[in-house]
Image (cartoon, rainbow, N blue to C red):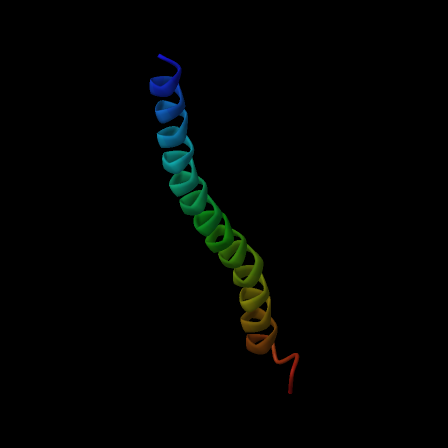
Length: 53
């Protein structure tokens, strides 16, 4: 019985590692979009108002 439990414990971390990898990638994507997006928006807004002329 102990061997079966250890096998179950080994398979669970593998599935959680895959899920955590996906969440890390999606978290990086969200931080990139919400971090760079507003900066680009502000630059476009200032450029349209003639700030850089």
